[in-house]
Image (cartoon, rainbow, N blue to C red; front, side, top):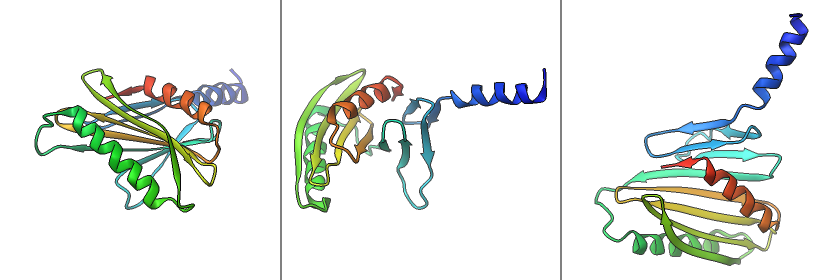
Amino acid sequence: MQPLLLFLALASTCGWAATEYKNPDFELKLGSDWTRTVLIGAEHLYFSSKRADVSIKADSGRMKNKVQDPYKAAQVLIEKGIKRESDENKTGWATITKQGISKFRDGVQATYSGRDGTQRSFTWVGFIKEDKVVYLYFETPTRNELRLAVVVEEVLEGFRY
């Protein structure tokens, strides 16, 4: 094979590789357009997709004591997250358009979504097991909440905890 053809063949193969992240708490498999950015001093992970115009912050933590009521813990996490959205928002307001708690695999999933005065849309998803919590925070600078919901679903298909 000619060197140029070999290079093009390898380049096109690499271009479709998925972005994967694994740690003891969770695994995240994203499409080929996602990139991971290492933030110095940050405990969370940061991924972004130019195609979708969405970023994800991911974090996890272990519990010192086992969660006795994961649904109650999920409600507390949603309430704290919504308060943080309001307190930290530069425009002074955030509208929560959806929130919920449901069974997810062998734990509980807590979710809230919304937008703010800058036209930013966001979705927070927390996964609670008896001994750990994993958070995924999705945001886009646009008000395209339906597109963000599609991206969240796509990402959750490649998520394991």
